[in-house]
Image (tube, rainbow, N blue to C red; front, side, top):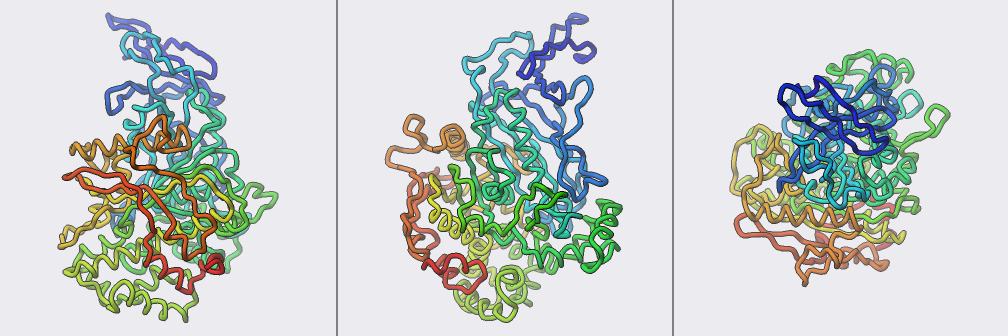
Length: 614
């Protein structure tokens, strides 16, 4: 075995090589290694999309296991290890139940899950001879992309089965992915020092601090770090732009299909208290009136699986609501000296106390597929939905945004605008189905982005690049959002939530390799655009242009428009086409114009910060 005898070539704080000595006719075999303060890390070689060698260091602990007294507490730096860490395996999932793909998901993962992965291109070109030949750029520090995984704060992971790095490893950047705590383990709060909340986001902060401390040893540039994410990862990215706890830990940001102002990204204190009380009662640890120290101490003794099994009790309609535990307001104290949020996210945008770093953000055309497919493509669920349509949509879309007495009035307006005053969904009527997709798209994703673009423009945030993804490829996440449903209806679902991810990362847990030449060509272009932004802060700089000459993707320039007018002035890169006919890049304008104006005119809680600018 190649690890029978290890000869360690130790270059302090730099990529070097851990080699076997020759034995029994076998040549020496070298593996990439890095020494950081915690100890020596030995990685492995993998191959990029085009066959280039890159170094992979996987399952590196960035925090102590969050168990025992560290459950419902901020993460702590890990202990050093003896000898060396063999960083070639797959990190365990953070314990979860993935309601995104099923209304009765199984439990996966474990609490000891705070690990990260580092991928570095083109360090060593001959893995069999031990030859130290390096490419011309190896000694130059590379820009770093830290990608935060999706999953509605309840599921997912940064592991290679969902975030295979091989596309980006054809480029000259360092990629970091990681796991963070989910669901109640990531967010449960008592609104005081006993369980202040936001542990998932504090995990992410600690991962970013790890990058600042150690990425130079992997040839990464700690002064050129871009954080990025999709869905919950995008909401996290935007929250890091707001949080003082993340200040100075990154220099650019990419948010794909997610935003800090989305209803699922933050929950007010009154609602948080209610959720925690219910969670305690579900597992026999009291209720919202129980002294918080007693409640938290009890919850720390309950098995993680019992806590996760109890999540079913929160559901009011199959898997709804998807997101129960999310970010909260904290109080700074001696026991909680580094809170993540001390006020609602929108207030950071209103008062301008956020990091105005270069930002790339965008949406997929039919984000609402994430909910609509599961509701429509199962005849039993569709029947139950239609039997109680008003209550289900009101609870799902409106309950957190206005008082109980106002819900009925706004629902009537929604019914008229999106469903032509109907109170059921007709699966045989494409307009009816599209109305359901659109109302979820707007309420859960697009209107929050519109609000943040407006508020950030008032604070002079520049540059901001926006895109819209409408390309329909051979594969789609929509089939997974349908859950166990296999029923097909006569409707073109279009580009679904998460579909842009298919062209940035291989996802072997869900999809085969891309086979369509148009899909592959689009993937190459999108990886180039994202890499350009990571490298230059501009997705399409003149010296490394990716887009056709007549497609001039410029930062947004809203010029202090009124809130209502802004949608007409927004320009963005529109990515359209299909795997059968090819893709197209074009500059488009307007932002779901009529649909956005509907929400501007609606009397919802979120508009109190923006509608005075009409």
